[in-house]
Amino acid sequence: MAEEKTIVELTEKMKGNVARSVNPYGCRQEILNQIAYVEGKGRYDGAKKALILGGSSSYGLASRITAAFGSGADTINVSFERPPKDEKMLGTAGWYNNYFFRKAAEEAGLIAKNFNGDCFTQEMKDQVIEYIKNEFGGKIDLLVYSVAAPKRANPDNPDEVWCSVIKSVGEPVTGENINLEEDTLFEQTVEPATQEEIEATKHVMGGEDWEIWVDELKKAGVLADGFKTILYSYIGPKSTYAFYHEGTLGAAKDAAEESSHRIQKEIDDIHGESLISVSRAVTTKASVVIPIFPLYCLALYKVEEETGTHETPIMHKDRLFRDMVYGNKREIDDNGRLRPDAWEQRPDIQAKVEELMAKITPENFNTDLTGYDEFRREFMQLNGFEVPGVTETTANLEELQSWEP
Image 1 (tube, helix red, strand yellow):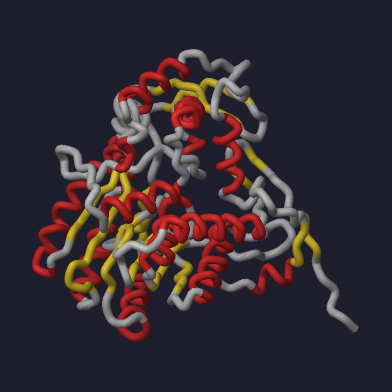
Image 2: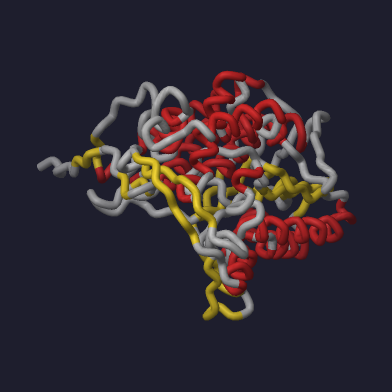
């Protein structure tokens, strides 16, 4: 008798601004679309052996795709994703992203290794180092640190757990936010972080773990001469400073810059380079819960649509690596940071964004006046929904469970 199949529905489910469902086939198509974009740009001379920490979605995934399909790199990814369990828990989008990326990379003759687990732990660092030594050619020439996490255990005292928060510093912040589930614009006030919360966020979202990774990799002798490492930061416009650049996340990014300087000293002897890159504003799972930021994106996306300057994560990171990390078109600020966000921060763009933000109300935020449709579409596509050409609305659970990254 043939084994009975469990058919599950692939439908959009939202809880506020949190996606509660996934369409694996949409994730597959998104991977293929990003690969096609990079391949359409042609090859560039970049990394050949890359380790991506946080490479299962958004900027980390885009970095992995451009390294592999832009410069022919073998890649290792470390990310923490949930596999499909049952009809109600189909796993995370990152689980499927890892699976479909590996398939595509291997079909192209590339190595694509996925480690599923906590990159903060010493156990994970040891596993990755052993793999590099024994099965990855012995050395890496690129480390991308693209980790956004809610918590991290103190490596010196595992019983102490630091939790990151997205809050202001000093004063409460009030601003509009979007509820994607209810399709509403609402006012939100967030109380300022305590000093303890600020320090905890720096431990989680700063550069401490980045430093540990580089130190462990160097001690193990697995960093190639000319090794590069890069961490992604964000500054943004003045309209979001109170909550971002001058808030807890900004404090963490400042700490990361201090880490970058220390890393640079550690890798000088192997002609290495430690880089901070200031990214542009994009739609991510985290960005939709930051007050003011979604409103800014609605205005920004509309202005960029009209000026032809809008970039998705793959467009942004491919340009970063192709032109700046490995190319001769670097844009560097006074602090030595790479600034691929310069397009977004152009004075003429920002002037138009500020003008449009002043016109947005709860009655018109989701109309043609703004870039709401693009913002929402990009959010849904993170989980494989609203992807052009994808028609699957059901899946075989047993098949999904067989897809091992």
